[in-house]
Length: 193
Ligand code: ZN
Ligand code: ZN
Image (tube, rainbow, N blue to C red; front, side, top):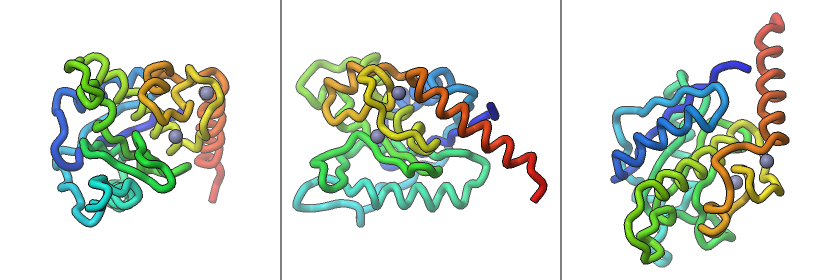
């Protein structure tokens, strides 16, 4: 399987320690992966803000990440991290969104922070949740769909309970799918064009 390079881009204000920890964790949770941060953070796009809902449209932010991914060609996937509440109709909120398959992925820290639920600050739990959602969205960029195994990172979680229940790793079935799709890509490279 070929090496995968993930670029992390911060959008707006984000907890630096948390982003660093997620970066580290991506290299262990995703097979054969390196992760690097893009130095410059992007400003939060005001056009993504929905005043009535007081939330940001995740589609609009994902489009901005896609544009960045087209500019910065050295990464296989770009993960944007925001710390604002995001939504995508018909869902009232989402933890993240990604192209499937593609290069652009997005997670929101907003509802992953234990403090959002009135709990006391817990960095370890915050990092763990953020890692799971980051791996999940990057899994989508690799072409993975949602998995019915509630412990697999590709399980769709629309509540923090489901995020906490699942692991930050792919189940065997999902792992094999990645391996196979990477193998096909490698073969493609070897084909004379
Ligand atoms: Zn998903
Ligand atoms: Zn799975």
